[in-house]
Amino acid sequence: LSELRWHPLLEQWVITATHRQERTFFPPDDYCPLCPTKEGGIPTEVPLPYYELVTFENKFPSLRRCPPEPAVEGTDLFKVRPAIGVCEVVLYSPEHTGTLTDKSELEIERLIHVWTDKYLELGALDFVDYVFIFENKGKEIGVTLTHPHGQIYAYPFIPPVIATELRASRRYKRKTGNCLICDIIAEELKDGRRVVVQNSDFVAVVPFYARYPYEVHIMPLEHRRCLPEFSDEEKRSLAKILKIVLLKYDNLWGFSLPYMMVMHQKPTDGKARGYYHFHIEFYPPYRTKDKLKYLAGSESGAGVFINDTLAEEKAKELRETEPRV
Amino acid sequence: VRMIKEVAVKEDGRLITYYWFENKLGLQNVEGRQYASSCVGTLSQEQSVIADKLVNKTHKSKSTL
Image (cartoon, rainbow over the protein chains, first blue to last red):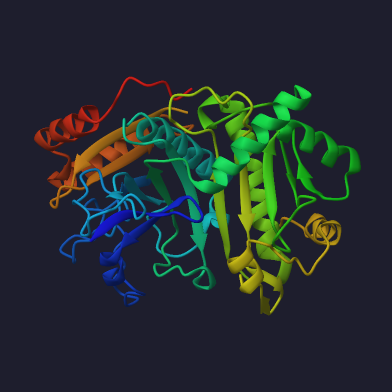
């Protein structure tokens, strides 16, 4: 069963996908469904015995190209529609162990080319309005397969967080004539206290408005709306800064830091959205070395984040953490 | 970056896309891909045609830029 149910109070779609209860949950060490299929071995999700980078449609998708009809009938108030879309898995490596941090700059650069291709391919589908590239890393985030991988959701609508950012960016542009994130970057660079690392094309900051203690945003210095607008050189720069941020995370406390990594790009609904600015956001769930930040009553029930830390102090910690391999 | 993309259809009908890259030494990785393809007959011409149809059928002429 899979369908979209409209939440009339929040004015957003909820995906009901009951079949996902059956998805693979921490398979045994000697069988990983994301490893290449060994000769004579049990077939995995990847039939070939070797690959560099692979994407495939999720076996337990929240959204499908050909979704079933909704199981319930909708009403004017309780709207329901088929859960059309695409959910893909992106395998970073044929190696079972390791994380994105362990990949070389070149391997991360290649992954960026794959992300770009997928953004274009899935974004061109007539039922897709938004291509959302993300990674959930670590059991603290709910990851059930440890093989290094990310995901792509191609939604048939613009997700609410993106819609809010689009509205804010459009309003700001109308009011000031400037791009909101271009101005945020300028102010962060002028202040400097929240900058974690910068290279010729990108800056990584713990933003002034960080909601998670070690939240980091990576933003291109030039105005870019989406991955296909980056030159090869900029993609290389993005790989370099991603690698540094990931190494800093893992060196912060000496263990592989879990996180959610989300990519915010312009929608693929055919509108120009010239006012929008590409960026990547990281949300690590830890607030100290051994304490998690939970999305509790205020965050979940009221939408108000409480950050127990100062962005300026956390940025300093990350800035002073060496990105050593 | 020279990237080769191959779309295939898995047995249950799901699409899988392989990406292969040329490295500084030339075609080493591309040859690796040919080696992989010859080991398992998954990427048959017939399946690639089906995959192309599936991908193209659902494409529309909207601009993503």
